[in-house]
Amino acid sequence: MYRIYLYLLHFYYIGSDMKIEYIKNSDVSRALIGVPKGHRHLRVILILKDKRVLIFSEATIANLTRAYVNIKTHPEKRAIELKLTKGDNFKSGYAKYQLLEVERNEDEIEEEITRILALQ
Image (cartoon, rainbow, N blue to C red; front, side):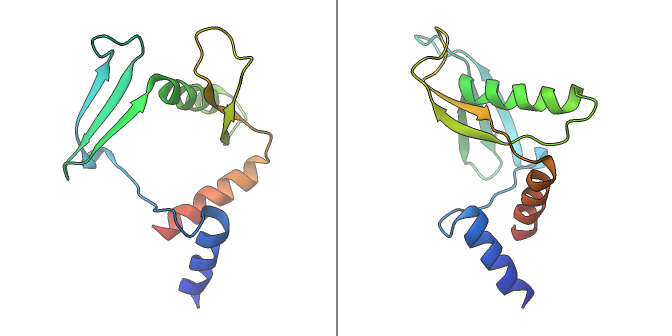
């Protein structure tokens, strides 16, 4: 019964076609951070021990870093949800797509995080 409940949570909150993966420090063999030759923006490349490679754009890292710093340095904030937003009026130099903070109850966000971690 518990597995059925977890499956339903997975389907409802995450989607039946999503794959949950938790990457820990011990899964990463190397990380490369820098601007590739001929480019203007930073990339973060994680090389995992199982030979998979994850590449993150500067915009993605900046959005996640902003949220991380906000939570870690705020005396009350415990959780943030970022949602993909396409903008035509962003400041010059900003990526067209951004992960921006949405208004959502922190308790709900923490509950969703807990449910997703239970599915892995």
